[in-house]
Length: 229
Image 1 (cartoon, rainbow, N blue to C red):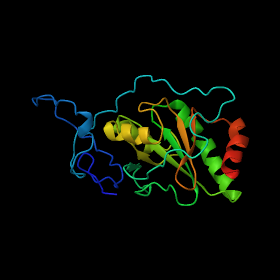
Image 2: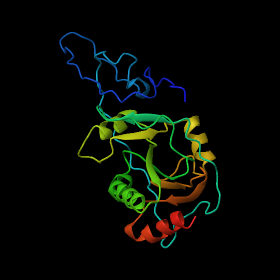
Image 3: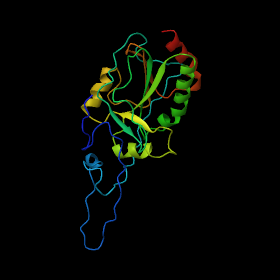
Image 4: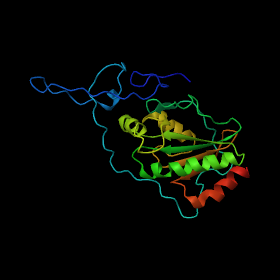
């Protein structure tokens, strides 16, 4: 995958925490707020004014239909490409692989989430525990996270905050046509209500789309789906 620059930085570089600078308020003219696209500058050593992350407006989150698990294909669905994703990580944390690990003879559990999505953050420990449990039972599953955050600064701040979640790195689909195409190609709405789960089989094809957070009682059906394939 080409390391496409994002705001002047290479894709596969860790998120940079910008350093706030004191601005003289005597006779200096006020500095205009930075646009979202200027949140990260091309020079990582530059000292720039850090604007606070915008407070995300309340957005709807997915609500699961009682008793229903998969809303997408339960057979051989779309093929998932591991290309075209950006990567982000808290300072000092390892980045995800440049190419998402799909279609390598093991299941891939893709979780679409965002920093503003409370159910997304709440289910992360459960997803992690299920990944460990499945692999302990000799079922090869890799859990990956894909952020759909629009505000890059909000994503950065969450990853850098140890008290927010245990998540320190993630793939990222930024807002725009590339995101819309990527989601459409895998059978997910271009503007989905989060969280959304994609269970991708060992061949790289989508086997199940789950809209909404998973619950502990979903475990038997998920185990059966993965192990009976």
